[in-house]
Length: 69
Image 1 (cartoon, rainbow, N blue to C red):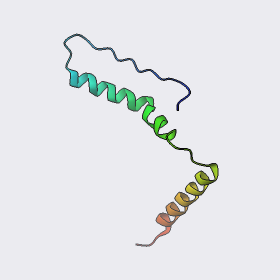
Image 2: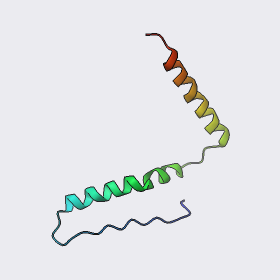
Image 3: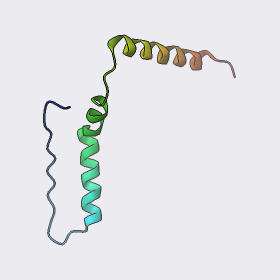
């Protein structure tokens, strides 16, 4: 669970198209990184597992960099 609460305030004008308001809302959520924070806190990954994942990614990048086509 997130320890700090984040609020997104969206102001709209009376009679404004709801599609435009929703589009602005989606952009505001993306910019605030709220989705990333929620996904990050969905499961706990041990530090050793994080290091292992980073090592695997680095090996893969090296493989792509030096592979001969």
